[in-house]
Image 1 (tube, rainbow, N blue to C red):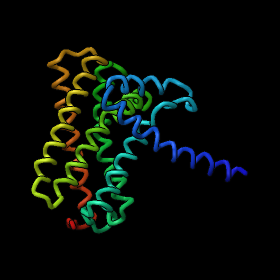
Image 2 (cartoon, rainbow, N blue to C red):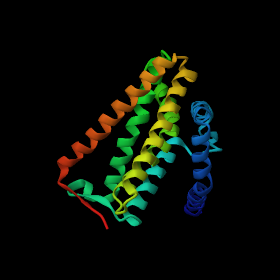
Image 3 (cartoon, rainbow, N blue to C red):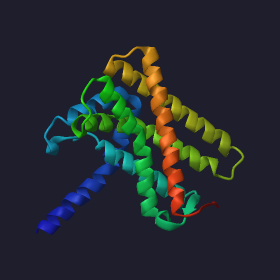
Image 4 (cartoon, rainbow, N blue to C red):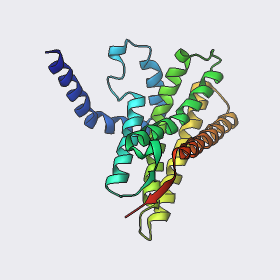
Length: 223
């Protein structure tokens, strides 16, 4: 009976993603600041009542990466082929999740510092969760740009560049507004914090993948 009940809960959880994933994504695009406040507020509620109206931010981020990874390998048929530990697609997906999670992590650290709180797992968690929401649209734009950039069409590279640029501008704007509204910073300081977060996140993201090459060589295949 317990096994059937667990299966029932798991099935409902999975199929509910079909409804709440697009709803959460739409809300993140249209109301990023509201979603930041929502994530921070939800973590003050009892665990069983948290994120009843949207996907949990880390799950939302991981599902986005899993969806992009699936489309890249099964539809566009282009991917980097690793040797060693990362030859397993599951390990590669985990690496991508960790690498992209560095963006909300560093943003969370900045928000903890600006709010003058003592850094701890308890104070960092709501900041990290909140920044996961606004990071997902940028992550999806970056993944789509990479897929289009590897496609064999004359229009692919310009469109890929445009998609990435739109995603980056949206992300930078959302982060700047977030620093201004939620941390009461000036516009200049908010822009500086945004540039710093994106640059540090990008450097660490690239560094993570460079370190992964130590497990073996990598080649790119495309069809």
